[in-house]
Length: 259
Image 1 (cartoon, rainbow, N blue to C red):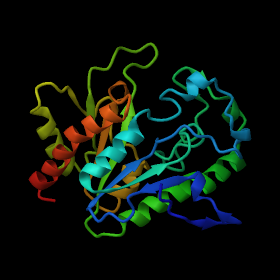
Image 2 (cartoon, rainbow, N blue to C red):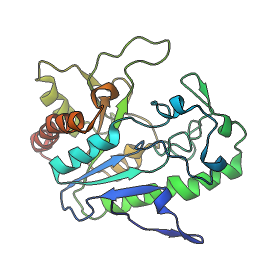
Image 3 (cartoon, rainbow, N blue to C red):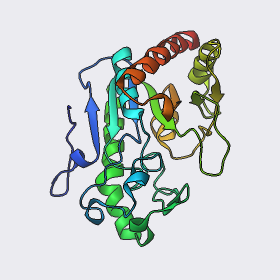
């Protein structure tokens, strides 16, 4: 996979922070995947957060299916895809640097042992080697064109512990500061009778300091955040299927919105 190298400190560190796929593509679309992998770099507690393998394989550590879906969507849109290469439990790239949930110590009933004693110095080290290089790469890619459209890809779990099942197959998230693209995409997906589409469900898209805020809202770029329920993306075939359904809603929505 192509890598976008940045140097920092003693040498290149972006191999532990992000990957870029299709860097030579010229589409307006830029697809980003904040929670693409559950990898823990070996310099973080020896590469082990102290969780059982079953916990590291579930949604608390990354967004299952998101990377494969995003790559298939990038193919469908002719878009570059930029993805993180570290677990959200190491440090969450979809949080601002001052967000109290940037470095989680408890998530969906699971304590993260290696994070319990992580202080300010460790937090800064993870920011410097992972979070910041990832966001520098996103911004550099977004800045290649003046008309970049940002599409952020996430997945959500069908049911949190102790909570009711989630009925939506797809969630389209937005901030009230800019609903131009999301409103048009929602209208298109809502016409499909076999889909239950969430408007800012199962989460709100209005999170100050998150990736859309930083790279979409602040610079005024058209943006949309797409969430797919992760049980619908078990393999490459399913990921391609959903990319084939979502891509026309994105391109059609962009045209409809006149952006």
